Length: 139
Length: 139
Length: 139
Length: 139
Image (cartoon, rainbow over the protein chains, first blue to last red):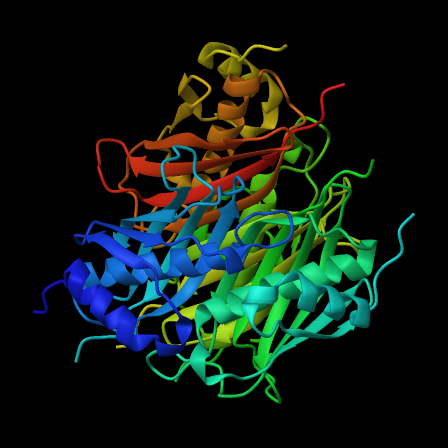
């Protein structure tokens, strides 16, 4: 049986695996039940109105669940998102974004997690997402 | 009353408004009921497994509805996404992505559209999204 | 290989299978690509404000996709909904509701469809849903 | 300014307002931040496969957020659901269902909450929903 990856191992994979994507978000914690990622604040994510872009938050939600799955079931790079639903709740501050994902279901075929995204230091969430990944069958 | 923007006007705005975002998707059609955007194929959107990244498709779904709203009700840059739900259906080919958005509801406060994303030249969709924007009140 | 069920066969199953549920919606068409169901107007679905209840429309969206799957892949009563996302767009009239489901993806493990719900005789949809079912593996 | 309703007041309204709906779920707690509803187990909610029906859980998710809004902002019977997205995670036991809703956003126009539904006495959720209501403007 595979064992879950550590946050350091996941970060190394994300840096290698996404060469064109600039800075991937940084995994700060990943223990198989909960994972936390930090997206450093960068000015070019700004959109009109001064808020961080929705696509930035969608990518962050997708990545933090990817990291959560790696920490839960081990290296499964071919896991793919099947559904992502996100509600944008408040304008983020010009600060790092912190995403926290929690496992809702760890099935054989589907992995479901919810994600709260907050501006660093804030209590109220900027966005809330629910993300489903399809896990490839073990051979 | 404001009149809807043309595809050319929307493209000019997207190029100016997103200076750090690289190439924004190109609006090919926008008539207030339907809008179509093309996302040129770029290698750095690739993720492990050889498919275009989910975040690329989420950003495209978000942008094509933004363009649809501009074509329907005029320049409203402070319109913000409140909900985006996307299902990933098939791996896209290494080709341009074409997104087509249709108006489901054009309310005073909320604008809802669905989006089909296909690889250029393909019939079957790679992804399907439903996107809700909140429209700022007219003063 | 199983063959798809006809609308009559599906109606017979729904009447038997849901004895406590009162009148199930009536399948009017089901051809493996598209399915249509009619929910007869009943006063006790009214909620405050005079509109048909949201739960009525959610149940209808769920059932029309269940019927679509039976028409597409044959009798699979253990197929279960994994995700349902619905947007309520307009208040329905006091009339029958017509739901039309279209196949978005017919995978081995997941079946995805979108659903438009309209008041009988109206063009604009009252609600739009996207529904995912998990299909049990064939043995 | 209106004050929030108590659980007893909300239960009285639900019993009066839904005369045809049989037994509405029972609000057990509602304090403006969190609301809890119990749906008593009834055999006629069973569907093939022995699980409680998805529509039962969708109706319960919708109602617990309706109750949460009443407890948060007072009597607003014309509040309407605009979006409901639900993931079905595990088969419920043949037991009462307990739904717990938490406020994610309390805006002037939109109220967003997430909902965990569990079989009474169980830790793992059967379903997880995110529900958005549109609140009518105050005059």
